Amino acid sequence: MNMLSTQSSHDPQAFTTLPDRQPVLRVIPMPSDLNAHGDVFGGWVMSQVDLAGAIVAQQRAKGRVATVAVNSFQFKHPIAIGDVISFYGEIIKTGKTSITIDVQVYSTHQPQLAEAHTVKVTEAILTYVALHQDGSKRELPEH
Image (cartoon, rainbow, N blue to C red):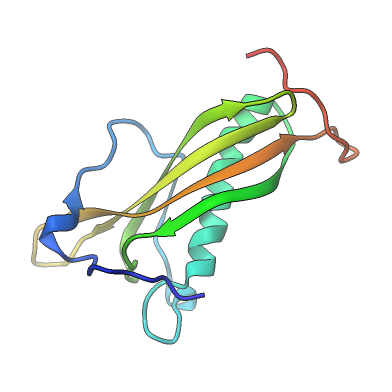
């Protein structure tokens, strides 16, 4: 899956700032994470989003969780090798056994001689379910 984009990640109109909180995950894509066109492969981004969402879900569930749904996933801009990718996760809904997380992804491009700039590259909503150690569903603990 290639990441589709309507604007370049270097479009000044798309520049933003990072949210004023700690990211759940921060990574730098490597050459092995690129597709045939030189952009970061969409599947790599999806796996990182799932990890970031799972971290938030595990904290709320106080234990093991599994991804049960990717409710939405939108690629807004491509990611280049060497960009610093920041993942921010937030609980948007809980059920009896499930937790729905909104994950927002930002890319900060840091060229050697130019000013760094940040764009929001992806946003996804995922649902996780809390599990017992044997893999069966369990209710979420009191918050």
